[in-house]
Amino acid sequence: MLSPASHHHYSRPISNAVRQLPQPAASNLDDPIEMMGAAMPFARNAEIYGENEPAEYVYKVVSGAVRTHKILADGRRQIGGFYLPGDVFGLESGDEHTFAAEAITASKVMIVKRSTLLTMAARDGNVARKLWALTSGELRRLQNHTLALIKTAQERVVGFLFEMAARGSADNQVDLPMSRQDIADYLGLTIETVSRTLSQLQSSAAIDLPNSRCIVLRNRAALGRLNA
Amino acid sequence: MLSPASHHHYSRPISNAVRQLPQPAASNLDDPIEMMGAAMPFARNAEIYGENEPAEYVYKVVSGAVRTHKILADGRRQIGGFYLPGDVFGLESGDEHTFAAEAITASKVMIVKRSTLLTMAARDGNVARKLWALTSGELRRLQNHTLALIKTAQERVVGFLFEMAARGSADNQVDLPMSRQDIADYLGLTIETVSRTLSQLQSSAAIDLPNSRCIVLRNRAALGRLNA
DNA sequence: CGACCATTTGATATGGATCAAGCGATGTGG
DNA sequence: CCACATCGCTTGATCCATATCAAATGGTCG
Image (cartoon, rainbow over all chains, first blue to last red; front, top):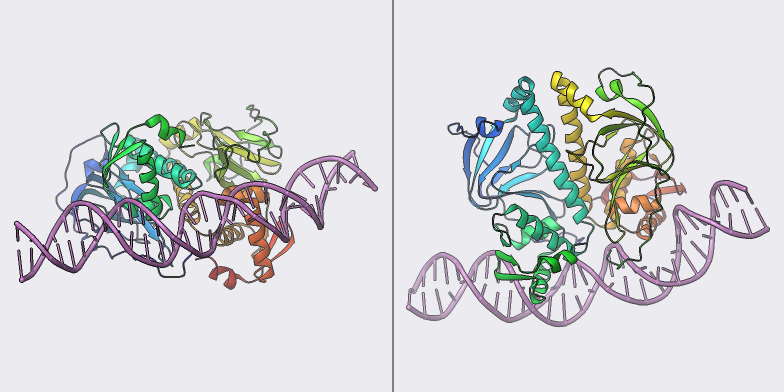
């Protein structure tokens, strides 16, 4: 947590996002972002936008998975959130992105100009409300994440599993697009602690680990008891 | 951080907020909350709203100071934020407050019905934008707080001092309305660690502690170096 | 003065970080 | 098709920052 400088280093994103928007695509009319968006593909680990970059666009995951992060001076990385298909990201705040965004796996992302949304919001109260609701949802998610960060390692990991299970399609099977390092940096733990905690949960029969990217919740009651 | 049950307990708030609004007060027309608000006094430690209570109102601090918090099953408390005169709180999200709010000191708070604001927002794009901006600001604050929680104790305390100094009127003097316990629960530390860290900063001449509720920043450069 | 409460300070314990190997998949070139 | 390098993950041994337990100090109010 405080080693001077010798941290694991994060390999630079493969490429900056090319900002030329392909053809607009229309689909779900009640969603301004899908309505106005242009789909764009990103390779694994490609940067979608950088930290402190002007927040010119708003994004919605179509397929794949995205993470946002911030890197501190000494190399520590905090992951702000994981975004799965259907999730909107990049509307954090005013002028600049406080976090950077990268594709975790090869992903398709809808991109809309923020200014377009603002114009639409000015004309249409529903759009304005939708944008506000999305921001509020993000705020609530972050409040829960903040709470998680004061808990024990076990509680954080179990909470993460529940969170992912709730978002996935299968009820008790969690397919993780992200690495252990991503999970660790999201939960404010080390990769070793995450791994150990999962092993421990497995040996106590609470979960099953068919492979490192797949986790089966075997005993939700037992997990719940560890969740505080 | 994980003791079974025997935590310091938080004395119940003195009283639930009486929800009868006194006369409306008008003052700053460009601010819908001040425009429509009704001022209401709260005693020290009085509850302004409870956790999971329907989010019927939005609040703005007129005088005094407010904290929001959530208490986990085992007694651990997380403080979500501190709000000083001029700050708006309680518009976290949709239907319910995720955190509770209490007056830290005797305080006056403007209260506006959320529904009133929503009606105004539907008619006036400026109000809608203002509400969104406030939510965004809160989101950004929370992002920074989340970042703080992965740092060392010293970094958290120094960050807190800078945050409070930036918000106060005096440049290098910080007058704290809140107790050490409040600070500890905000930073995810124990009261002892907060106290020790401050003592340490004092003995290294980075700060001065005329008394426990007042902190003078003596050497911002040195503090900045400890801030990561 | 004396009771009470918040804060500081001291001694010790521990959860998770760090340092250091192992291990199992995946892919590449011979 | 199989050595073998690579990479992500797991497991083990040790260390340290912060929690916990305990006591002393100081400020406030009757």
